[in-house]
Amino acid sequence: MANVQTISAQRDAVDIRVYAPAESLRPLVSSYYFLESMGPLADFAPPEQANIRFAIEGVWRLGSNDGKAAIKPSNASLFGPSDRARRFATDGGLLMGVGLTATGWLTFIGGHASDFANLILPLGRQLGPSGLEILGRLAGASDDSERVAILDAILRDRPTRQNAYCAIAAQVQDAIQSGKIEDVADLAETVGVEHRRLLRVCTSAFGFPPVRLLRRQRFLRTLNLMRDRRDQPIGKLIDSSYYDQAHFNREFKAYMGMTPRAYFGMPHDIVDRVMQANDGVSDRWRGDRREPSQAMGRERN
Image (cartoon, rainbow, N blue to C red; front, side, top):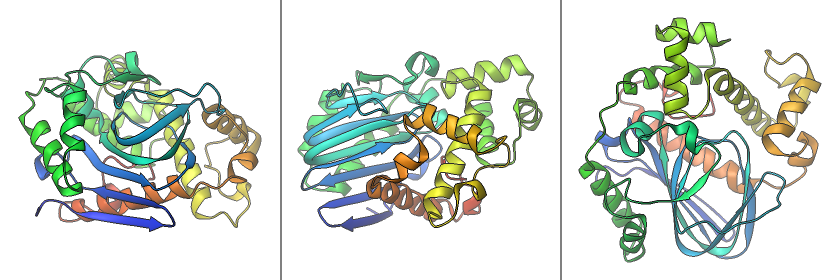
């Protein structure tokens, strides 16, 4: 398949593979990703934009950011946008995910994303065929390329919803992820809309009001810097818009359910490798149109 570009990160008994969608879907789908484990694993997924996930093999359990109240979601699930971590665990299996951009949410799912924030629901017929029908087709496929082709075809054939917020949502996504926006007033000025309309766009497409989106992005920006530079003191890495380290520590606990010391005292090899692989694919398939630092759909900027 000529349109598929992949980066694989394999270590021990876990294989992580990330693929680019078909070119026409790239404004809507950030990536397809596979997490395959030959044995038990557990980690914490950080706050994220909406995803669709298919448990092709094995049992995948999810819990709150404090690791309690584990549930087994539907094997074909819609994950709403989140502003808190989720713990995931499996005894082994294969999981396939579809990352949705804000415009992808408006186009494929519709409805106010705020109604789905921090929720996990069975995937119905939002993509045309039922979630379980799609799961059956993916499970019957022979390899990743065939599964990517199945989803590309389904998403390309899906009648798109016309939504007046799509163009503005794409601008908001670029602005937020640029790392240059200080506050909601800056965001409104950059995008060129008044505050009430910005609020409607953000809650509809991203699931949260703009002030919470900016706070989440600030936190993720600092979290990823800390991942990359674990040998440096936290105080030197936190974003300059935090009042002090105590301010960051409070937000860290709110998002992740634990202190930074507790979190980084645990292994997080899986999530780190997923993010690195996803970044690599994003840079490669966007490289012919814009610089990697301007890429949409990345939470690491």
